[in-house]
Amino acid sequence: MRERDAGRGVTRRRVLGIGGALGLMAATGLSASAALARRPSITGAELRSAVPLPPPFQVPLPLPPVLKPVATSDGTDRYEITQRETTAEILPGVRTPLWTYEGTFPGPTIESRRGRPVTVTHRNTLPVPTVVHLHGGRTPADSDGYPTDLVLPEGWQEPHQQMGHGMQPGHGMRDPRAVVTTLTRSYTFPLDQRPTLLWYHDHRMDFTAPAIWRGLAGLQIVRDDAEDALGLPAGPRELPLMIADRAFAADGGLAYPALDPTLRVRPGVHEPYVAGVLGDVILVNGAPWPVHEVDAARYRLRVLNASNARHYELEAVTDDGRRLDLVQIGADQGLLAAPVTHRLLPVAPAERYDVVVDFSGVPVGGLVRVVNRLGTGRTRDVLAFRVVREAADDSRVPATLSADLPSWRPSDAVRVRDLAFRVGRMGGGHGWLIGGLPFDPARSDLTTGLGDVEVWRLVADVHHPVHLHLAGFRVLSRSGRPPLPHDAGLKDTISLRPAESVEIITRFDGYRGRYLFHCHNAEHEDMGMMANLEIT
Image 1 (cartoon, rainbow, N blue to C red):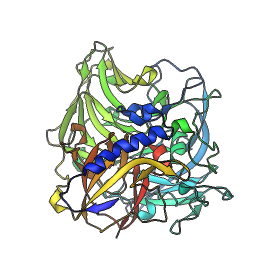
Image 2: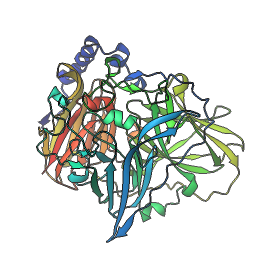
Image 3: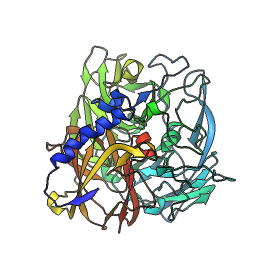
Image 4: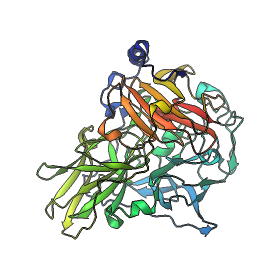
């Protein structure tokens, strides 16, 4: 990771280095399909469920409950969430143990307003430490969920052989800046940001992937008056859709190839899954291949890919083979300036897309399947909508959605950085590195000034969905060409493709402190692909 003068291009040496990284992956035992894939759906290895799976489009689509505040005072809404173990019927007739927020998967949704602070007190009754990160939130550093700012369960004893990144003892505790609490921690989110769909999830160092897999994920929605006035589909015609793949063991539990199934001592996964863990069951809001009854009207679908490693390319197809338009109105960080119409919509892990689908042209009784063009077999289906009635519809999609998108220009940048996301060696095994280094909470990787505009040039060996904490960004180019249609708007996660160079621009405003950027393939993140950003 090194700074360069603005305006200089990616060097030939840097581009040719991608091939070396791919060769290293093959040489170090990663599967050839994962190493050489140009299709992101196979950046990883798929687990196969050991229980019978239901047919698609039989289970109703659940909607996550909306959490009620326990108190409202001084302009702040206060919530309480208990992190606890439970069992739930995800597959019909099968009981599955889960780690949850407030006993549900996904966790309860928090509805919030722009500029109105929210405080959430989390109580950890799980058997391991946890950390909560509000993904996409403009959050002060002490509430951002830094991976070593642990909430310990009562009676927790640090395992003697605990090994973290770099294979050094002392998970979390070796970070001199870590703020560790026992049983509870309160996170404050000012929500001084554009209205959008956020999500909260566990962010414990080395163990984020299995914790999310076990159920620690939920939604938070930020709204404001300007968005409310646009006339977009609302109420029951606004649907949050958390898409996640999982696999099920013979006893009904969630299968996951952890080296330490207790998630206490040894991080990481077994060798075939180092590139990422894929499941063979597609869940939407915690239900397998669900179906939802809709009016013949417009619907707003707020899509989150909460999978650890699986990418999707979504397509809405009618009974007679017609493809419905997916009209994108928003990205990770809120509304676009104007709608963008897609037929196919790629969604990488942790990306969110806000789309409107019009069912008015589908006859009553018709089925619209949302399929994943990157899937095979059962993973090709995602969910379905059945049109059950004609209905009035006064919603609209305005030609102008938002006028408050930032207008940063490359000439505004005070520095340009090159950041390489590649496989490498870590602690005697395989790891995923940024700039050749695995994550170390005690090391400062990048420093920038509050208010600085920067251009980052990101280079990848295989597929890496890269997430930047605190700051949203705009995509300037992909390998010297214009951004893709789905790159529109303000984002906080960008899907890097193999041997691709992507330029983004951002401004580090908001708060000072220590933040992160990392790959959101959760297995890559746990195996080193994370770095520190200090805002001064």
